[in-house]
Image 1: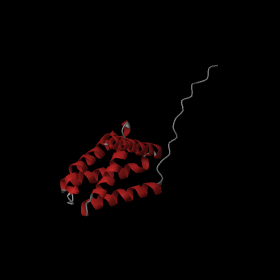
Image 2: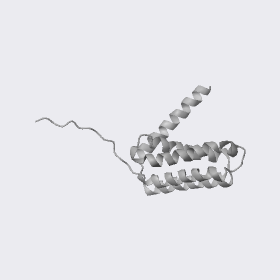
Image 3: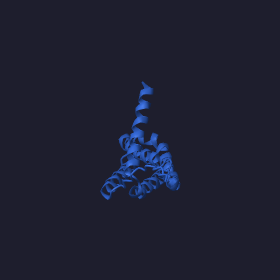
Length: 136
């Protein structure tokens, strides 16, 4: 009798409620800061979260709708970059899709896998390091 070929699968580690709450608090605090006292640090931190979640959802066909909403929020965030660098809050038409992206990320947090998020963080760090090397 032949044995079936065993296909190893990665262990799914869900985001715990404490981690989800901390992540969501940071996300909403950054959005509030962007609206009321914009600065480059707030922009960079919020953009970093958008980037990590986008990388985590990159090949997830089940969450393609959420990925599009988050991508729309990231695009609006990029549009607002010049205004934020000047110390001005984004316009209302820019904040609306950013808020949709933030709320979508917040809703997804409890359903994401910690190992996938960690992998996305590592990929983003590697991408940033490569970009810095190219600039030098």
